[in-house]
Image 1: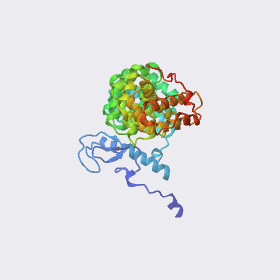
Image 2 (image 1 turned 60 degrees about the horizontal axis):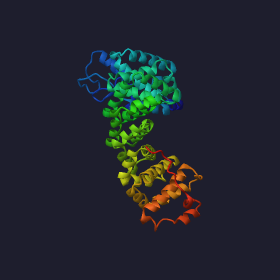
Image 3 (image 1 turned 45 degrees about the vertical axis):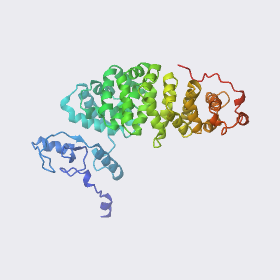
Image 4 (image 1 turned 30 degrees about the vertical axis):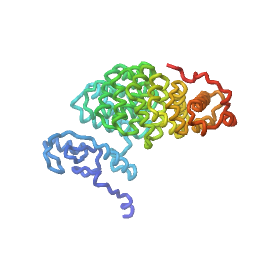
Length: 433
């Protein structure tokens, strides 16, 4: 009896199909909002019923919506309590998965519209399968014709939004190393503009999650100069990327967009176009937001350092003193490389552009003290960052009379071994454009 009690598992009612009363293997929801196991509800409908079994409401639509959230909950419960059946376990056998994937590839390659229900269910299962580890993702990535079939769905752009969202999710999840990214890139490059058109539709109409995954996919395919140029020269796409930063407050989405823009901002014309489209203002808002997470701030500083290598970028940064103030505020609160980006931006505006208002804003934001702190962070004599800091100390002291009373004298700075008195700048740290 004790042994029987130990073996007894209480299954939450939420996990049971209202028809079979078994744990659901593939939960799907009807338009009434009630969730069933796919096999059970399919048998019910195939028998000629046109009502919801639980509510007895007439069904205006017999379409299914995979309940992925409930499926994950069942999988988590199964991991903790032991799977109530092999199919509800989160561990999929490789042989079954291979058959599923093989059938899926066949339907996708042949654009079999009548198999939509299977395609959605199979893609959902594959997303779950890929989420359980790198080995599963490698199995999918190495499956013959799998990547090209998934990419084909996106390049054609004729499938329903649900199917395409799942396709993006699959590609995003399996792009774990460079070899897979090369596969995706090779498949996309044959139909690049069609692919970008589909991605644009996600950026305009997709959920926040699908937007993030789409932007990450853009970064994934930006592997060479040609693909980066193709993305950067698509003005509508760049504007769409900036627009979602303006209208969506999700920091993970901002982080993804900034990462993508860093990848494709290679040419001077691209940098100038981004500046003209208001990028600097968006980056300023990110840095000024106290709730903005560190990764987003670091990418914002990297983008500012990239556009500050152009005259347009320096001018846009110098016009609004809020940008310089925000940069100084974040300078010592980010990684070492991001701190170097911050110094490079301030140097570009103060030393190359020579904007007086910006110099005053930096001084009034305690910029001199922070620049001194950067110099004392282990940069050897002649290091690019150390040289820029010395330039900044000199121009900020000379350019702002208000700083003279509060800033250390040249001799006291020399006392720290900084050698400012004998330093002469050639201002060659960043190439002028």
